Length: 506
Image 1 (cartoon, rainbow, N blue to C red):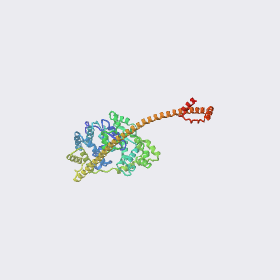
Image 2: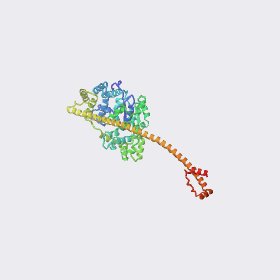
Image 3: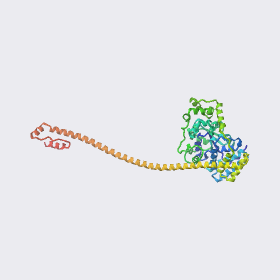
Image 4: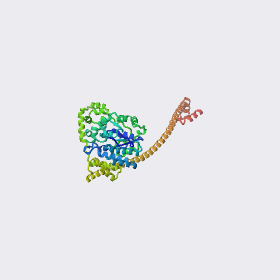
């Protein structure tokens, strides 16, 4: 099967991982490169793959509604420029009229990827969608030469992040109440491990633990893999810019990494040891089995779990638990839902009503279905409106939240200036007090020295008085005093000088 000529298009790069594995942070870093366009999660390949499967055989192991809204963000971004919009419209209309099933979906994906990158002035498009583990073979068939980056992480730390960040219980993860999140652990981990183990030159495998331990080193190796020069700006992934703004406005992706000033955080590594209870560890070990830890390169985790008292079942028993969870996690889509998704995407591309009508006719013929009845058209229209309203409602709420945060930051800036003024005033007052204290200490020192000197002089004067009293108390003087009845003067410090004069006169 030959695919369409892609010589004029940009060959994408795929970042593949489990959710909660650090892919948002890595993609934001890569998006800071001047040559890499890396929007929030497109999810488009999931919907495109479904077009190659007959509805009667199709089951959805993912959230179709979220996939549609995420893909809509990509389509709107790609069609923002008029010069690329027509190319995208043509790709939609020719989706089912080209040589083979894969030709049409590749042409549409190429139009979206290339338009997004070129409109951003970039030469490379990176599609980061964690749940692409569902379509690994499809992606490889469509893009056999495209480079793939696989980001792995300890399954227990991923499970803990599901629990603490998303509020998803370990019971849901291990299939006690199956959801698409159950499939992540029943299938996703294993598909990624298998894909990563294949020795191919188009694949770059990296462990989250190694990445956060030495991010700059890993980014340099990634740039070499992508045939790009390393840029130091990639480390400033959380600074304001196009990528961080798009992520902030998106309906998908990790919100925790969006805080300005946040550094690469290593503190989450190994938190499963204290964050998971013994029963939760046992449930995960029973569901995942021992082999997946070995395949992903986390053999030491097995020993730690065993030391904690966790028992691993036989490989077959774990596989049975996962198979039962998968059997109840997927759902078959109805035609109106699938039509609604694609009508929504066509509307995001800016297609007019007539063009959308032609597109739906092509879709119905391709799927070998009767043209939609009025009732089905009503369902499709309702689904389209619901998706659009939900998307716009969420976007409006996010814009309101951003405006509120901007106002709060502005107010914080005003308060900071006022506080800084107060700090300056207090600093000046303290400086003056310090100067006055220095002056006071100087004066106190002078007074202390003066008092000490006065004490010395007082002692000398007292000695002089004592000498005078001894003279006055001498025998001849006492006789004269008695004879002439002269009272002896009372001597004090101030009388010392007169007493001395009296002695001279005598």
